[in-house]
Length: 294
Image 1 (cartoon, rainbow, N blue to C red):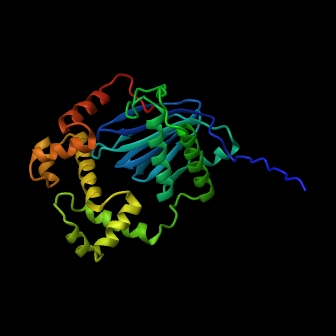
Image 2: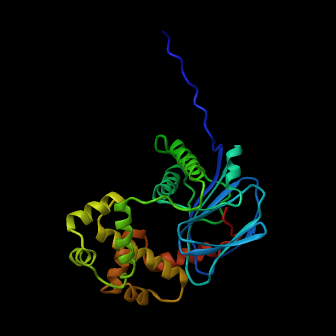
Image 3: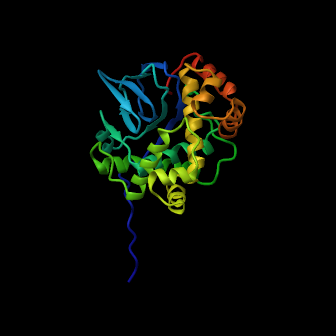
């Protein structure tokens, strides 16, 4: 008996990608707005923003995503206090399933955040255009693109859309016990960014064994707990620099570093530039002409 193949029918397909951005805005950033004939999603990775979508206005916090349909006027601004980090992806998809996202705001779960992270990561391999330039209107391909990166980027975006449609509601999915435990420890770390912690202290305060703590963080974050704590401190430093209320020495002290010189070394190791260079680069981007999220 001959085999009979089945032709797979995609539920939706992203046909074109316009931009992928990861922005680290200042606390007073404002985008006056625009409208275009393709979809755009905006995800708040850190901080909060105020969004205009057509005639409506929304306050979006960390972990929330809003979709702007083709032709919809949209604008955004920071709240004047917290410096937000945003992921912005604009794309073309003409399938009827996209009607689900009209006026839709979603709260992303762990798997969906992983897909969004993969979109940003693969974009860095596909495109030579910096993902933090708000003046970008055309993404330029790298000369040497890793094998399959464009397809992985497309499939990650399509899977994210499919998962959100399947879920249907704006509530995040139930998290696993290990994810919940990791989240509670990360919250504990966030409350102690001004301190110098040891693994022993973290274990004691959270009633967890060292081996369990390290294996849990390796599975959930890809690294050790102290490495994660160090990155959290530097992320906080980047936010404080963009908020512009403290100088470099004050930020170093606020985050519990033993000296401003050690702080600068750690910052450069993780960010690739010194705190002063980072502050200068942010200022240059925010002062660039014709600012926009595209």
